[in-house]
Amino acid sequence: MTGLDRAAYRRAAGRFASGIMVVSTRQAGIDHAMTVTAFTSVSLDPVLVLFCAEKVARFHDAVLAAGTWAASVLREDSEKAARWLATRGRPLAGQLDAFRHHPGPLTGAPVLDDALSALECRTTAVHDGGDHSIVVGEVLGVTEPSPDEDMGPLLHFSGRYRRLRPDG
Ligand SMILES: Cc1cc2nc3c(=O)[nH]c(=O)nc-3n(C[C@H](O)[C@H](O)[C@H](O)COP(=O)(O)O)c2cc1C
Image 1 (cartoon, rainbow, N blue to C red):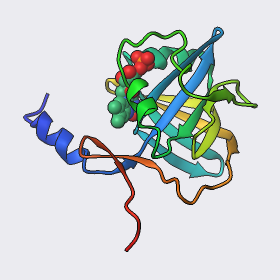
Image 2 (cartoon, protein in one colour):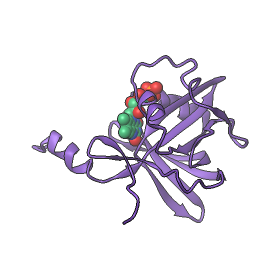
Image 3 (cartoon, helix red, strand yellow):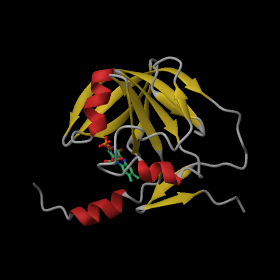
């Protein structure tokens, strides 16, 4: 334990703007999903990405047991999904019912139909990261719906959901 002011840390780190992902997996016949911002590309050869999963999240054990997962990049009109899938204690069963989704062709993990894009991954390493695990995955395939120029990403900055402003 350091003398770090945790509230100040959260404010400072929260000024690093990020997109929003919904990571998802299918384990023992149940679809699990949660909202994350701790996601990044790692390597191009092989193609690796990572996300950080809080060890107490129900998603944590489900994704480690499944070994495969998907990550859907949220559109600017998906704040409802982002909020719901970040709500602790929501019912596990049917948690994606309100949002159109389909099984990823490579992993069976649920992919959001309205995502800007989606990646399907296989876990290649899990590293300890304090109260989170750092889950590294090889990208097996991607989904790229036709781009809608009018639909940008959902962002998170300074504790709030945001949208890109048009240029100019
Ligand atoms: C904007 C935002 C970003 C989040 N990013 C992460 C993250 O990167 N990793 C994580 O484990 N939890 C993250 N969370 C918290 C999880 O979404 C939340 O704990 C969720 O309810 C866990 O669901 P589960 O217990 O069903 O697995 C984030 C929440 C919000 C609102």
